[in-house]
Length: 207
Image 1 (cartoon, helix red, strand yellow):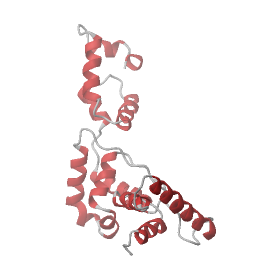
Image 2 (image 1 turned 30 degrees about the vertical axis):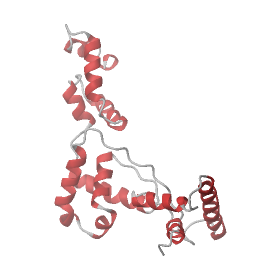
Image 3 (image 1 turned 90 degrees about the horizontal axis):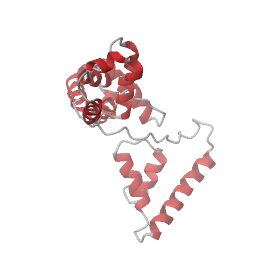
Image 4 (image 1 turned 90 degrees about the vertical axis):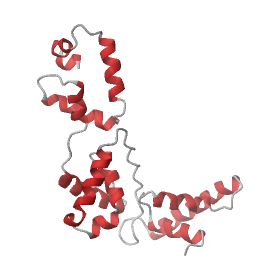
């Protein structure tokens, strides 16, 4: 702030120890994520005068248009479901999408989801410390849809099962923890190769 605004910023705290100001800001900004702080810092470039603490927090967490956020969730959620790289403007949009569910997003129009979506988004935006967005797991494409050969895909599956069961056996379980971990990640909404899901379900007797 001092480098960006010089005495304009310092004059706001005239007569107050700067160390006390810094401690107060640190306490109030602690719940914000790194991405949110980056948004706020970038927004300073548009302001001629330094913001107060409440103003800066608003810069970090700008008001989100539910319609714009819905279309973002529709696009980025679809990419995540397909195992492609996704990019979200805010953890709140991601978690609101998760709360609604990928199926409803792809099968229902906005007018049908409007009330649920706005409620879910508002609830996520109100959280002081939202959970970070889980890392995307890029899925293996279906046979014939990519340069990845069928033999290579089968080898990847074989390696995964062999290494997974080998680690499980070392800790003395029933040798199927690797399968359970795949399904746990599936339940959390992480996109993985369908072949891996099916292999895990077969291993656990679910198919």
